[in-house]
Length: 101
Image (cartoon, rainbow, N blue to C red; front, side, top):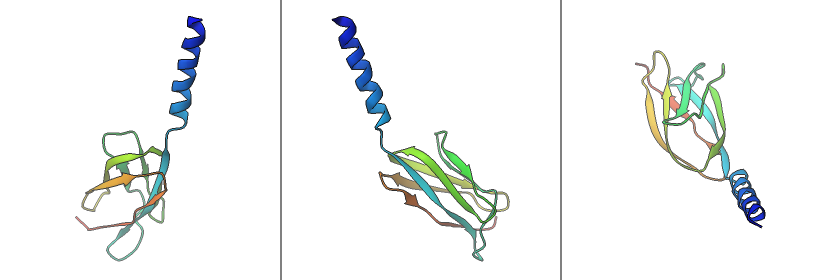
């Protein structure tokens, strides 16, 4: 009987972690002239979630748990940016323009 209850509790914990709300943060990082900046590091501070922009300045970070985060954006030759972001159950789009350093 104890084994059965242990199994039920373990199953419940496993299912609740699988049903966790996850979302995507995507967007474009541009220079002041509107051109996308390739190779920009975009990451959620104090987490393992991050991405680098493609040749057009686009990025996507998938499977982010819902919550409040600080986004860090940095690129060589540009001023770094930190921004508060709220990740909810819907995909988020965030476009930023970086100033030259």
